[in-house]
Length: 188
Length: 387
Picture 1 (cartoon, rainbow over the protein chains, first blue to last red):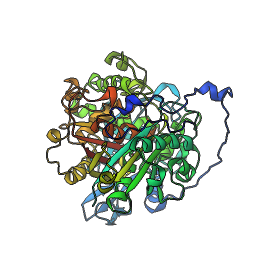
Picture 2 (spheres, each protein chain N blue to C red; picture 1 turned 30 degrees about the vertical axis):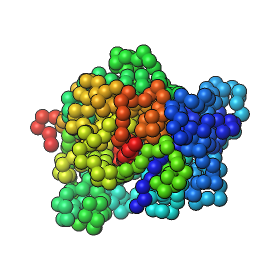
Picture 3 (cartoon, chains in turn red, brown; picture 1 turned 180 degrees about the vertical axis):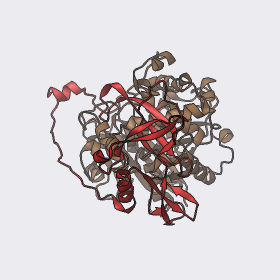
């Protein structure tokens, strides 16, 4: 550890960044850690959680098992709120009623990902993005995967529809929708 | 409210891995900041620290864990956390300690050690997502940047090379920064465009690296500054912050409205009416190259969709009319989340007091703005400083 390493710099002594001779910090690399060239202490936490889904999300997940998206309406701002919520963050009052919206929508944005969640490289890219759903207020939607389309075909503004898993495979999860696929002519 | 000045700054090297503990890094940065202000710990009335999620260090009560290194021992002390925004927000928390009259001198110390988390800090970034709606999809943090960048590029018809220019500018600027992790004097737009595709449109050289590091600033009241006859000071003339909902799939990602609201709050306090004319330079938050552009627009320093044009025309170069990230930014110096204070608030202090050495903007600068951004694409804080 250095002592006071920065020279006294106040009172018109210009150029702190050029006067400090040694900026503190000792760089090491991953091999230093893995091969024990620096002293390390290791710990692997055992952390497990069970989240109660709450009022709005419990109903939302139940309806997914029935193959439907639901939203909540607010008479204060006249929005159809999706994802559904029991209070309106804008009006700061309870929302008013459940409503079923459609399983079709529009791709607002997307990515073609060559990374999984641990930043590990994957060969076949994941198509993922935000879809705004028909029947909810404009621009309101959810993140999900896209399928039955190539990285060349996917585009912002593309019309899509939920590809539901078979009823017996649904678990009350956003994964009850396998992905969103292109909306076919005459569908929706 | 009392007038508050920044009177000292310090920082460590930014590197992928540093041997020092969080506590040791805090001490080094805090000691340097106090030395540069000509103060001792006895002069400090209150201490504020900032650090991003505890999961990186693997130590809960992280603020308490490293407080000795921050100089917080037996003093009024608090840690603040606003995600990636912590890098500028802790200075705002320090400011209110002094502006309110509670303290004459506040020491602000930020630390981040992302290397402790194995094998990669990405795995704990996964914990920021909504557990019911988002997490079953096993999202990667880079996805949200990719989605925001794609929306921004597509709506405004921005070419990828105009975004890559930001990475080139900042990594070249960082050559003059003694703490820089990813400076590169020879990098070209083609290097960025040819780098590995991580999550299109994000490529490897569009991203700042995870880093270890610490930084500190010393804040004091104008009465204290006069009494001690401190010459090197830069005044905090405006602060602002704002947050939007975590329901990020409900808003158009093309424009960060919450940044504009935070900026307007800070500009109002600083009595700035025309930011593009009245602000000489900026240190916007640039964890990804497109974020600098997005934030220049949010800070009202560029019209919507026009920040890429400013970059292409050289306006935001260090010797341009409106330099952005003269420090080298997160893209070039590194991204130890909260510790980026050293290249944001710290850089404003060094530039405004003429102490930036080889990074000094080659004309007189009197007003600068810095900004940080965080949480789930929803939070921003802004600080305006004057010479």
